[in-house]
Length: 204
Image (cartoon, rainbow, N blue to C red; front, side):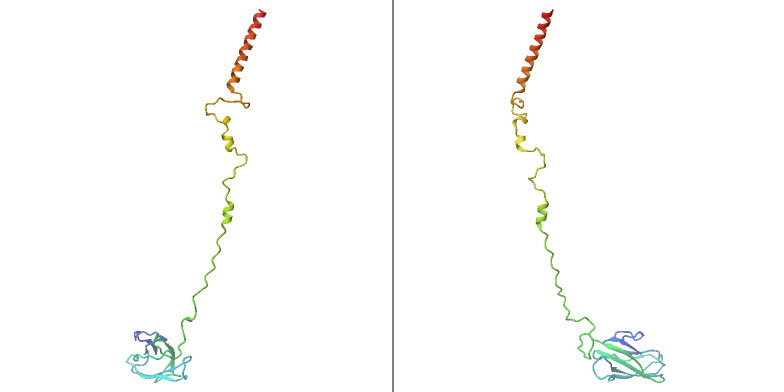
């Protein structure tokens, strides 16, 4: 004998031990046989163990199949027993649970879900301190620093002797114009040539 949800087809031969509204379904008995059954409260459901809460007799068809009408029980744990003519040994039995969500049925149904007292307010992770900006500032080179040996001094670049513009004459380091020196050299060369000529004439 199987326990079926009310929505399960009566020719489905699986057993469903967790139900709300249910029925009992018999298979593979002798044709035309009668099966007597009863359901008892079973631990851990409250109440006295062995207390019968449902009972009945099921007349089977020629194929040895039959089903009860749909029924419900308060949420809890139960045990089904059945007897029939020609059985061997003790009565056959199956345990099952009834649990109709929101039905309010009692019976000490154990909770199958996690405790509702658990909270999800996890402490937020501490934020990491912002890195100091002094390190990045100190690592950057100073824009006013100049390379050793640099000749980019403003005074050097503005010296009149280094500039060729302005229309002035070029001067030596002593301030004497180059043109004057060139003229004096030409006079000396000319005088030297004249003296050489005079000496040759005197010898001749």
